[in-house]
Image (cartoon, rainbow, N blue to C red):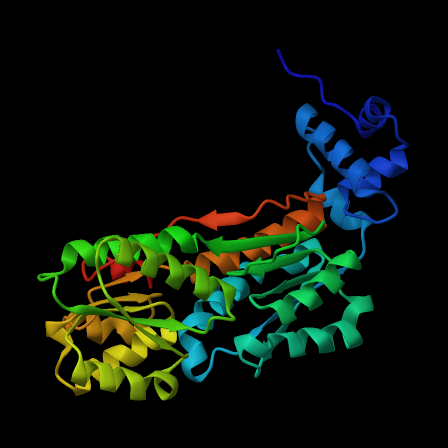
Length: 347
């Protein structure tokens, strides 16, 4: 027997609100409280009401989504190239839904992306309907909070936002488990137990990096390994201290908690002809790592889902702007270990 199709009028009656309020809730418009919106959307889900997307597009005006990420250049290309590719691919064809994307490839690094967000807030706030960006520091999160309070739906990539905003959702890898996975692989892969572990931990003020490195360090120490820590991003930051440790200490394994340091340490080990004598676990997968896998310098990396994060972000902002689906639950991606035999499938 075919189920009777529910109407918006019936949803309004069952929730005790006007038909106009139901429209505002479903199509993501303002003028109603978040509590009322969620009550209506819960009834929509319960009754399996299907939004007529074609009619929705005809009724509403154009929507603009701003994407603010560091430009995929120099050492930032390793991390942000995949994000940009996924976002641009998923954004193709969104014009048919009257959703238009404005891409800001910022010259500011990740630690200073708040400067670009400040400019967007001051110059573009009244003309945007959505924001996709990355926020992983206290200063950046201040600006995310300001956008949130103005009702702008926000999708954050690989970020940690401490407040539970009404319109903020994060897409990120499970950095805690990623750290433990890297430690587990390294512990079982070591041929001897009397050497030390060199950990390239990035910057402490970048929260995701800190969580990832801390859980690796904690797990390795619990297994009885001694850790040598080097802070900084990229070869210029880490080369001096890494060289000293490689010359003076018995380093049997290296863990790099970000893409820049993974590439940099592989370069350094190849130049010193030390690669095959040290177990190396890095982070991210990208084209420039291929020769180091093939030469046996790089043993494994923890995958970061760059392309997938970008695609998911675009689809999620589309759901919100086209169908009024406001799901603030974070998308947590599971840790995956890539080795020489399978890394090519994830490029």
